[in-house]
Amino acid sequence: MEQTDFVFIEGAPPPQTPPCRPAASDNIGIIAGTEGNIIIDKIHVPQQVTGYEYQFLACRDAIAEGLYEPPQMALDETLYIMQLMDGLRKEWDVRYPMDED
Image (cartoon, rainbow, N blue to C red):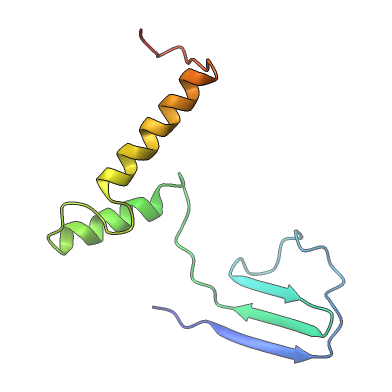
């Protein structure tokens, strides 16, 4: 795993650029405070394409370890959340075109 470097600049003023401005590198972070800044360089973030990358990696690791489900999200918890969401949709009368009676 790639190492993350932290740099604290005591007494440094907050950056003069808006926090949403693109940086020269997409793996740097700046936490601006009233007493200084923390610059985090070399943040390792998996490539995001669909938003399901973390779920894929968790499942891949579970299979490699011989598990039937990833410990981060057990099947029972997934089913509970889906039932809760279905109940809320029914209570709020939210329907999608693919829904059947």
